[in-house]
Image (cartoon, rainbow, N blue to C red):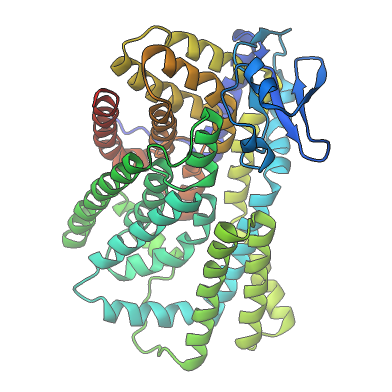
Length: 497
């Protein structure tokens, strides 16, 4: 039997970037006009391909543009990004992206993704400091004894808590911080790194897929569709509960098989290397001293403060990064690490995640090629034409696949919402599908594809664990198929009941 080994994450993304650059030579260039609100001037700004026009910030302006969104959604800041204006798509002069643009795209992507890249590097430095103190070792030893015989609780708790973070405030990029911390704990519980990866990544994915109060997904999409974000909330809660249950049972089944027979692990050939990388040498002689407890509490507080800041104080990457930097300094002070040693360890820890940071930048570079090549809106235009006049059951499921496909090129949930909802939501009206179900299709299409999308976070997550994309696909594809069938059934019943 021939085994196919996929190249590294960086190479996969560069291949995708080259293919997208090639698409810009084939797919016609074009765009939709956009409308944005200027709070300082209390005016709308309409941007066409070449012209910028100031318009009165009134409901009449929105009605005249066939934008079925209440004015207050703009004035109170619910919609802060430019939205697409229906029926304004125009073909433009082609802007094919050549070899030079392809070469520059990763650099542009790294610059555009600098905020999350710095977050990843600072987290790497913090993890390096934590490993040096050996507080992790003491905590893991204590946890292994506490959970002995009940290790499955770890899977349920981690998946559920991260899922709650995903559904409430869009916990996604922030989970990069959890892998170096939780993987050693899962290894100490006699699971493999795939179980840790799945609990974190799938927990985040199912949470964001079934967003309930997530301002970057369900709320902004509902606003852009012209409906209240609470419309359809019950259905989103039902989907979240059942979807999370399916994911947890799937992970538990695999985890129990690996625990009973480690040779059944998809990454058994990497067992020793991964255990060496994450220091799975649980030393029962290391005691959880008072100083270790303080260090671990401080470390945990970094995440508590981060979650609170993002969900309640409108923090974003700069503030989150500052929290982890301050946390590293305080922990170094409590651990009595000398200044020169602290800097060396911190820099080495950041360097350990440099590969992850570069992957994030290359992935962003693919979006840069799409935008510079002016083909994103063309994809949306043809996708919207496909669904015209469909039976509503066929329509809602077609929309699911369309959003899954579009998310390959537009991985930002908020960007997808403001670009597509003003255009897609009226299509639902024409076939008798309520707009909250269009929001469902947007969320579930993007969310399902996020489980495997190479332009999303999965390659960066895999790079931390040093697990190949092919092995992840082998693990997760049965779950994706199960969730896809369940989602299609849920959407079909929703539009008919």
